[in-house]
Image (spheres, rainbow, N blue to C red):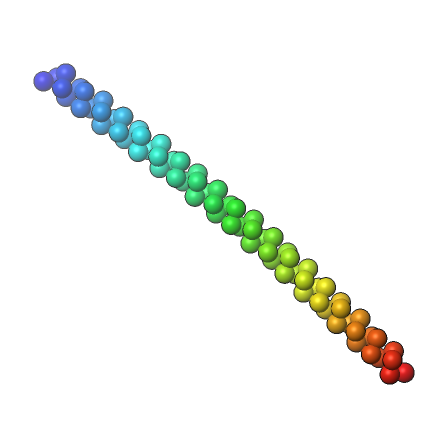
Length: 71
């Protein structure tokens, strides 16, 4: 009986270790996905800010040209 109990304990410990490793892997994977999403969001925000600035500059230049033509 002791041998069977010991084998069951070994199997249970191995199963728990496998579950723990799988959970650690999933946590690392999730962390990587979140990090990548954050980086993509930051890049999109930078692109949007650059677009907005360029748009404002174009509008100012057009307005200046209009004012110069009216003179």
